[in-house]
Image 1 (spheres, rainbow over the protein chains, first blue to last red):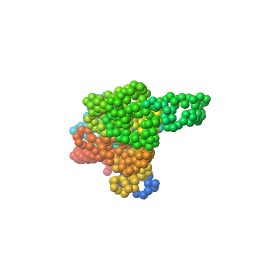
Image 2: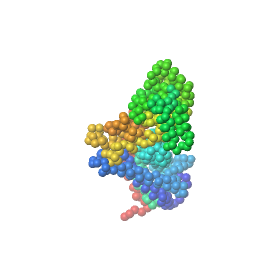
Image 3: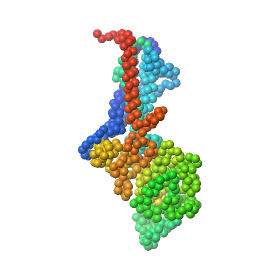
Length: 236
Length: 366
């Protein structure tokens, strides 16, 4: 099987099942998915709290638990993200696809426009790819990766605001508040970025199911066992 | 005008003998060796009160109103005994040319040694014509007085951030002091107005220790602005429990629940209201049943309603479209969901029209 080494496009030859997503990448993916779900639900509830609960305040820590789950999930997401960055240095080509988009490659651009035409139903067949297709990779980079960086930094900016200026956390992340001007702005950016991430999650979920059902290679199982299996030839 | 601390103590009825005793005792308690008492007595007999020039730009004088209500220390003690308020066009007895003469004298006499306190800010549009005290644009006066000042205190949100006159669209181009004067140490004491005790506390610190207090990354004294109103709020347990006022006339409001859902900005406001409080520690907005409006934070006028804790955002590219992050985000998600459903439907139709997908699979389960 001939594969373009920059874009991962299958260019010919007999199709061979290929190991694409290494174990740390798969583990990171599912950990991140669970964190994003927990963060999305608790984050929304922090912005729009549920109706008040009765009884004495001393008997309840309901809103506190929501924030605790949110902050803990955020920590897990951030640490997993750091490990993921490390893996991009030591892993295979697909492990770097999230961080490095080959803008310099003409083949990549051709693939991107081909994908766009295919998804607009202007082109009958899409190409086969080992790893992400260019449009998917661009979404991973611009929506997931950049969105996650903004969410993690503003998240820690908000986390640090619980501590006074001059403490360790404010020394580490107080710059986020200074950069955005004041604490409410950090909150607004974090909040808008959440919807950006949820928009990605919605499209991503639709796309992986669609790809897996209609296209020539496995997608969902690839993120479970790491192997991309080809069901039919390109153009078929 | 140039009284020493010794002169002041004498005027308050303290004898020379008591003064020297005080110096000896202070030297002993500080563990200073022989000659320590003499050094202290010498300093107190020669060091003059710090001269302060207080300018008023584009402002509402609420900072001064707050300042004169300080209880600990009393504003009169600060003004009459601790500092030498040589020029303050609102509080001084002199007026007109006499007042302006006092300003000139102070600048000349204490060149490089006086503290400049600024209440309000200069509007820069049209050469500063929107604020003309004493016949000249305020920005000119500010620049001239700031040139020879030792340090600048920015009183209130006007001087610190810009406040209401700098709210969008800011027609007079009102500009906070630190963006006009860039070569002097500036202490921001934001708030609309700042708490009286915070104002006198900052002044007392500077006079007592002859240096500026520790400032945070945004130039505010750490001792008063290092924590959010939320962090020391007495209603915080209701926040953690999930007990919120939903409307101002509901049972939660009567029970003193957390005001977060009716727009309290306490979680995003650095100030000392929940600890120092107002009017001799009597109360503060949240204690009175109204959420914090975040008056000591930059741009608090431009964040939308005081009764919504989420900022109102303008949608770029669509005139008149605005809403909170939730409103806009959920709308976008709903639109994306509809697009996904439509795309899925077209995909399904295309798929059904093609020859049947299972033909292409090499083996089909029987």
